[in-house]
Length: 620
Image (cartoon, rainbow, N blue to C red; front, side):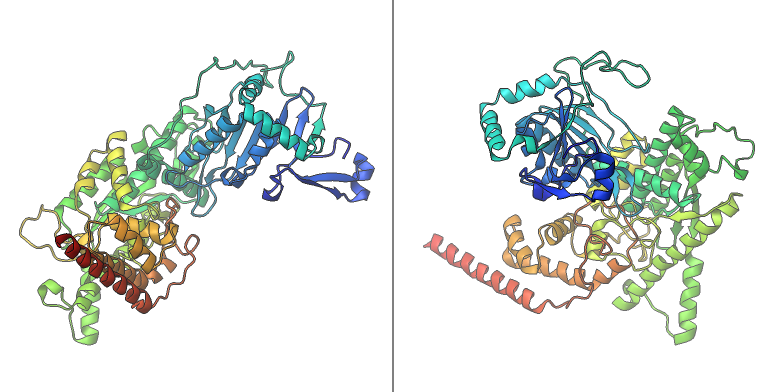
């Protein structure tokens, strides 16, 4: 179509091959104002007055076998844009970068990648990291995690380098010629002769008159890829900041047990305070500083005589205003976890409390005794399994009630306005296994670690111990995970608790991570998981593998209902069992798995017979 009213758009997946359709436009609008009756729909490129061509592909097209950038490159498009909406997952940036570098290394060209940054109001966090890539080299890269909403990166490129690069690949020229014959090149471009990008006296000059200096030939921007343990900390930290500033809350409240999970959540809040404080100090009049003053109640009636340009003097200064932690101990708690919780609170700078909830536990049990005439006992003291579990669960659930009471009233206690968001700290492996009490401290407003594995969290703790000088995290990471809900066995009050998570679960956290990936990412049921694990765990007998798989699916099925009420968690792993968004499966399963377990048993028995026959053959 003619006229200047046509906008070029990168098309959908169906038009990647280069086909376009001429579509009739509403004549009473376009004919009258633009002298145009038709417009091409499909993949079109802009051809500017100085000969530069621009195209774009959508976020997902970069990941598909027939990506739009391939056809664009063969058509001679110089610059390809990708305005993406790609959410964060652990280790996902590596794949993105590999795709963009590989695309421009294979096809040549300039690739402009932009991505959303921030929380979408749900479980996702979009991790930015805008990039400029040319001929397989990264020229500019924005931060992956930052509390600022917008970050712009620039680079100066010589488009002759693109044409020279493509001309140096003979087979590229042959395929480009074939593509031009297949679909007429004139059908692919929208001419914009009155628009130019490069060359001329105004080249490399910004709107305010500053001159941009090209990068030296051959220089590359240093590629920054975070380690998974850094991603575990920085991504949820930015996510929490978005929730804090948008919700109007006065801060966070965290039940801090001194174990790995709650310590990881506390560390993430500490990282948030570090990032916000650094950004506020760098620009006291910027948006981050203004939001920080509002969240810290330093811009209104609570601020008293605070200066209008107030920013936190340190991350601990900010944490003391917005972060509240409490160790909720009972007679079953150890001195070791009490000490770790206190030391971590001091290191981060939180407003920390130590609360004894034994009186509450005793009151509930007294009510039960007056009603039924019976008093439950722990199994170590002669009680049944049902009694033991009930006594553990009442402690856990009372912690949730206590957390919400303190979250609502602590701002009032401190002479401030507002409320606190309660943070949970159950990891993805425990959610998958169901190793949590329904409506205990795993029930909260937000859970920054709900889709992160235990092993990744431990690595994060060790990284953060050095990064932020939280030395106590090394002690936390080395301690055996424990719920501390049963009586302590032994006389040493300073010793670690004898109740351990892996012993209670009947499986290790490493095994749970493998089960989770096979169940969700590989879409395995009991039988297909057994077959894969027989190869992975070749050091185990088929019967041992069968027992492990059946144990996992038994507990998965009886506890799946807990995922219906699970706290909204930061999405970090593709195998998250959160059924509210990422795992839309039923929550009622036949716990006996009659057919599947029978097939597994038959396969294990057959494998055992085959192994015996093979051994006999070798002996003979």
